[in-house]
Length: 196
Length: 400
Image 1: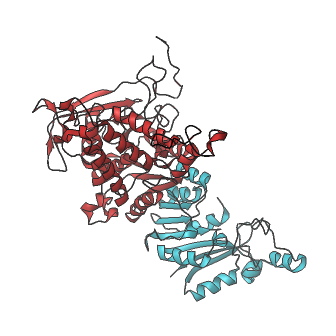
Image 2 (image 1 turned 180 degrees about the horizontal axis):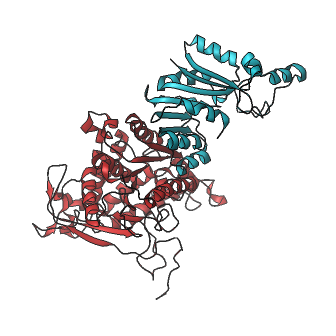
Image 3 (image 1 turned 180 degrees about the vertical axis):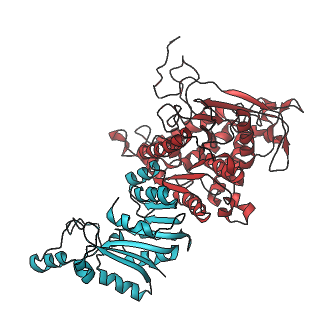
């Protein structure tokens, strides 16, 4: 399992209702089902991923979340997860609002664009940064709205979103003294647990 | 060629034969009337396992019947297989290596089950319009009796497309403990005004045919063939998509026909058939009208018009599913405008509102409403994937 998912599973209560936005092949939800007896729902648009979900017995709805979550009732899920997808959405701020409406609490993960190597690439080469987290060229990247940890903190302040917990980690999803010293400079991935 | 054996594919269920089952316990109908006794024509494929937990019920749509797969005649190379042969057989999505599959001709049908063309024991004549109006709920009640007869306490899955999908939803509502999975394909929560309007054209076509004789055409040794043909032609247009008709008929077939879908190169300057789509539609209507009872057609479209489970729940469709226990797989097809994807999403949204377990796919397909009968690759893969999981549950003693 991807490191960020390993870290967030402890925030998911046994027996709860979990919505995973962009659930991929459903492996994370299948794992939560097996270990925490959750009631799951995944949203996905990739045909092969949807087939994998069906094979895994994971409930999956073919739905483009960029068009909103209007079909889901307010407060109908305990936890809504959005892992490594925020930066690829048309309006990240609106999806965060929708997540907070549908779920009692939400978990978001995203790559920190202000990581010092990204800053250095832009500063020295004058080129769009690339890294294992951001492997794309500027012209073919699915990522539309990169943000930094400071940016997201600011969004939470403006929207009066309560941050229950924030974890910032490196490639291997570990923290370090440097990251704790300056998360927005040394951190590669950000993991937020938020609520209203 | 006498005795010429046809080649039957390895993944076909092969030669099959239907069975007529008689039920003599009166069935109370939604309309308040009662059918004292009735026959159901049933076809089955595969084997019921010792745990009796691997049975699938296939519900047919408007013009379907019990013959969903395989062949009847080994010597007729022209015979077409059952109507859902692409889905039923060894290695197919409804895999006869794993499942015992039951398909029946619904009550009111004209393929052997008791219907308007059957003899009314009270009069010794065909029922005609005296046959009671049957609703989706009545069908499902009769199907539950069939399940009792076959010793099936709980279906592994109940499956259907279009009007068949409506029966599936009714199963989940009326008999929540008797199915583990519900596959609702190309269906709708209820008909739209437009759907009912098309049905009204079909109804008027049949009833205004001089050979209809108030539904007593059997007594006059005739039948309203023109009316049924027209009804089917209108219906058929709603089963196809504009794109598919263009693909099929919108192309030039020779240099001389000005790039139009003319049957011959020349305009007739009369009202005969100029365009291929005309003869296609007439052929479809004619073939159908020779084999399908007009009164049954009227019954079937009435059952469609009346389907609306939400009426018992103050108009809230989600409440209808409050007690449903099964998992749902809902599927729609992009070019279906009879029951468009939005209608399937309404079903999904209401199931989600009721906190039910549901998966949903919208399959890209050009074939319109009829897509649900076609072996469209992504559709077949999805059925395979889902039913594979159902088969695993059966093997691990699946029962709730």
